[in-house]
Amino acid sequence: MKKYLLSMLAVTLLMFTFSSCDKDDEEVAVFELNGSSWVYNSPNGYESITITFTSNIDCVYVWAYDDGDVMDSQTTRYTYSYSEPYVELYPDDEGKAVLRGLINGSVMEVTNKSSNINIGTFYKK
Image 1 (tube, rainbow, N blue to C red):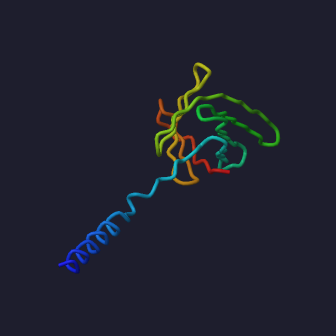
Image 2 (image 1 turned 180 degrees about the vertical axis):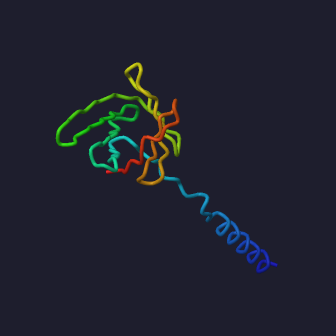
Image 3 (image 1 turned 90 degrees about the vertical axis):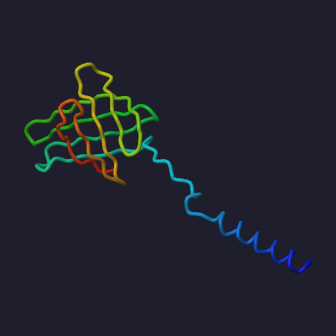
């Protein structure tokens, strides 16, 4: 009888051991924007946009244009919120567009949220 009880105890322990090893238990890595920069370059090469996330809630949007004759740039500060896979950028300056980015790995597709116009594809540096 002791052998039977010990065998049953061993089988029960083995069942618990195998059932507790599940891939669902793995922790999902949290995506962090803080400290990252994302860059868009226009097809003609004259225009570039860089979004740099400077903290857990702040970022800087820098637009630059240089065609050899005309040089211009503009910097706008934003606050943002991130809910995977979307990041929403809210301008500090009134009259600037609210932006929405769809992040897929090291690529972010950015659109003007109010006009639904695609700004471009940004690549993580």
